[in-house]
Image 1 (cartoon, rainbow, N blue to C red):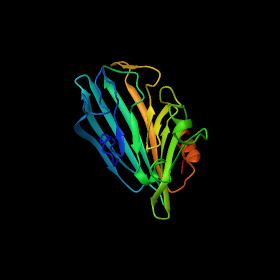
Image 2 (image 1 turned 180 degrees about the vertical axis):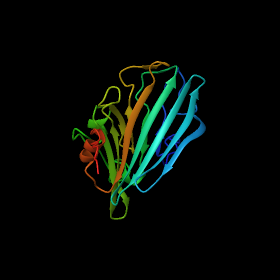
Image 3 (image 1 turned 90 degrees about the vertical axis):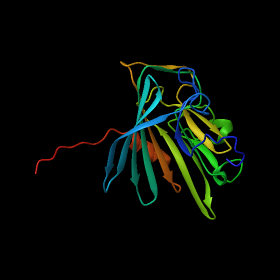
Length: 220
């Protein structure tokens, strides 16, 4: 962000603007503290890491990130598990968002915002519910690319509303319509997929993300 007014936009980030009254989004009152790496995996198909982070004395987050690389796109699965006791207040800021470079934005470059319903740019996409949202535009001379955020059908309130702006960012607005209470008996589990692509079919990526795995037992 060339103006410096959104220094809390860390490219791809997890935060929430109201957790027991504290603002973890704009870093005014709340900060997420990393406590431990609980798991690391690496192999030919994917790499995965699980992190334990503390938001408040009573709220712990386990964040699992799974990375997959293909010839023309990359996938990042983000799984968040919030356990303990806390109230996520009503807000359109959080829990997952992305900001693109200025050349990919509608305001400063040749970018476009599009959602799963076919609506385009902030005027028609902001705070609308959709299964996914995608930001795309020039990433280099003669090269276009994009990043899409996919909301899993198992998430509360799916399809989520999206907070988006033509200046180059978008995020899931999980608590747009009301607060969510987290208790020891009712942890909050969320799943999102981030697609980095060069003109891929986002709808196809969502269908694959939403589908139940095809598991077969074979005897040889």
